[in-house]
Length: 155
Picture 1: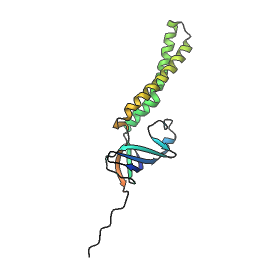
Picture 2: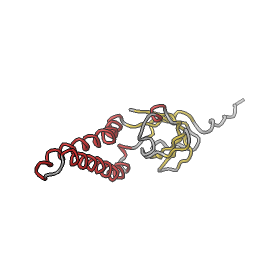
Picture 3: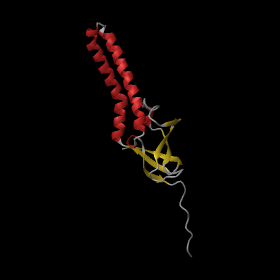
Picture 4: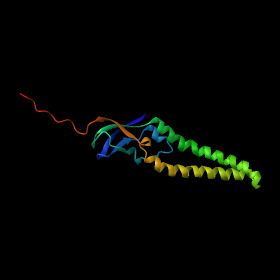
């Protein structure tokens, strides 16, 4: 599981908004601007289901299943490349039958399939954002917003 520490900035019984500092892994990621997080400088804000009843100011640990993160990575990075190659190979194979320059048709279909892959992934991302398995979740509360009340001493 991929985890990150954060602070609750806003909470209600259904949803908590968690602020974390952008990890080093995020800095090198080309998909950091489209991953569904709200960026404000070095901070990232996630909205997660409030399954632990956290309150504003609480410190929490949030996480995402590794399987889900790997699937999303595969979809964003590998699928478009596979579509590009499939389009280029299709164009190269169809060119003799259509009487068109093979390189031109390979390029045309390669870029078309590549663009189509991103269009489909963009449409699919909306559906995936609604599924909890592809969203971060609260793992545990690591600190409280306010110190516990002092008990009066009994003399």
